[in-house]
Amino acid sequence: MKDPKKKPLRVLGTVLESLPSLDFKVRLDNSREIIAHLAGKLRLFRIKILPGDRVTVEMTPYDENRGRIVYRER
Image (cartoon, rainbow, N blue to C red; front, side, top):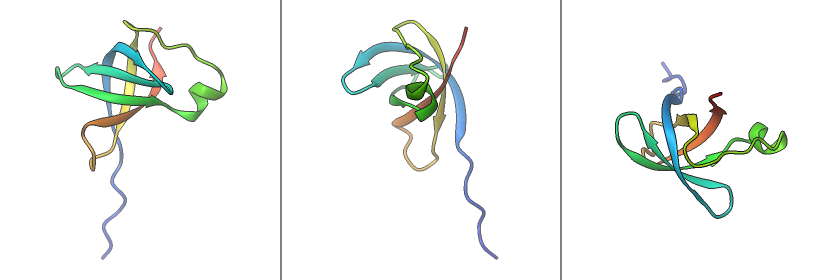
């Protein structure tokens, strides 16, 4: 029996700083800091992310130090 593909983990965090090439340093609610990049839809619709914004980050179970920003809270 095959193991189904692992689903990405979604966590909330706060953007700490903006890095080159649309990367961001994000502090998660569990006080870990990761590097996250923008998801394609956020780039396509030119959603601006600034330090201090609350974001939803999608993380893979394979690499716990990187993620993808999929939503900016209002």
